[in-house]
Image (tube, rainbow over all chains, first blue to last red):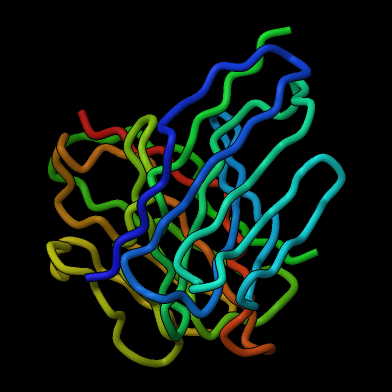
Length: 110
Length: 118
């Protein structure tokens, strides 16, 4: 069945350093979504990518969707302590069913 | 923005009890809702897709008779954990997709229900 792999599992950074998490699907995706979950909270939708090669930015966050629509990345420039949390990618291969990656837990040291 | 309310937020009960969790879309209609289970520090595991007016679609390995799902209206889906045992203790989260907009709609999550079975 469809699988979505996400790396790294966790990352510790110093405040101000950059951070990137990568997502790879076993099948071509119709779209990919990114969510952030704070400790004790629920996932919050960040963005959705639909087009091949698409790049979207939200302030310090840059999201990319691969040309083959099988991989994606989230890059955070100059991390802040408020960026702490787990970032999940979630892919759809068709329809509404969404498969989540394992998540990358980000720790930011002030 | 789209709001999903999930109730209760936490439950502690004895083994053998059945527990019902409600998921409501407050300001939009949701033909499709999802139920996930999340273990500590792990990803969301899709349990089932709840479709308004029809039977839920369960993922492989999820017991239909154990986790009863009812989606009786466009704004409410319920998950009942029947005869719960300690191994059912987990964080259960629902999400809903707006009925309008097609396949590119994002999921909006409830706050989750922390279930502890003693």
